Every structure is written in C-alpha cells, then in structure tokens.
Length: 137
Image 1 (cartoon, rainbow, N blue to C red):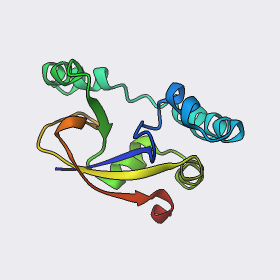
Image 2 (image 1 turned 180 degrees about the vertical axis):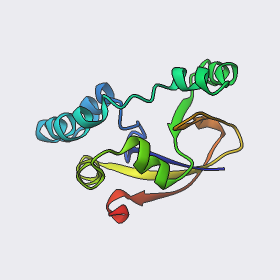
Image 3 (image 1 turned 120 degrees about the vertical axis):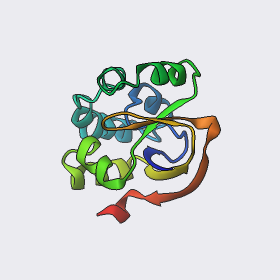
C-alpha cells in the first residue's frame, strides 16, 4: 500500500509535533508562524487514533502497533489527506511548505487502516519519494 504523510523535511516529524518543531525551526519567526498558521488550525481536528481504532474494530491491531514505539500516521490518498487533515487547504499547504514540511510517500504491507488514517511502522516501510506541498496547489 502507498501511504501519504505530511512530515518535516529534516526531522520526519509529523505536522502535529509542535514540541519537536520548536527544536528544528530555523528561526523564532518560523516557529511562531508554525504555531499560528499550522498548529492553531489543526490542533482541534477530532480524528483521534485510539477512538478510531475502537470504532472500526481495529483496537487490538492498533495497540500492537502502538506498543512498537515506531508508529507513524498517514492516509491512503491525497484526497483523504485533504478531506480529513488539511482544513483551509490552500493556506495550510502554503504555511506548511514555508515551515519546511513535505509530502512523503511510503510503501508498506504492515499497516492498520482506521477511519480517517493509516497507522504504520516506520521501520517497515520503503520511502518512495518526497513531493513539494506546493505542487498540490
């Protein structure tokens, strides 16, 4: 399966990792931009993985993956990413791009499909490529 994931180009951390982004932001201005234009927009997205696992009957598989400590999240398609995770798409994409985020495509057979996302083990994937977020506009 191909999985699409928005992550930082240097750290590979996802866009919800505000505590990590504070260490890799190149300037205080860039960090503040991330907090204001990215994190404040996405932090209230209601798709909580453990709830989705319970609601989709995948709780045991999700917990097994979660206990591996190498868990990442992504989507099955760019359309899912837009629909569930990137509200105010155009503005959010521009801000994520300016803050150093990219769209990574991974391939794996080891994943758990939830309602709005896919959970996978970062040690069991092949990174196919990295795409500029601006190319999605």
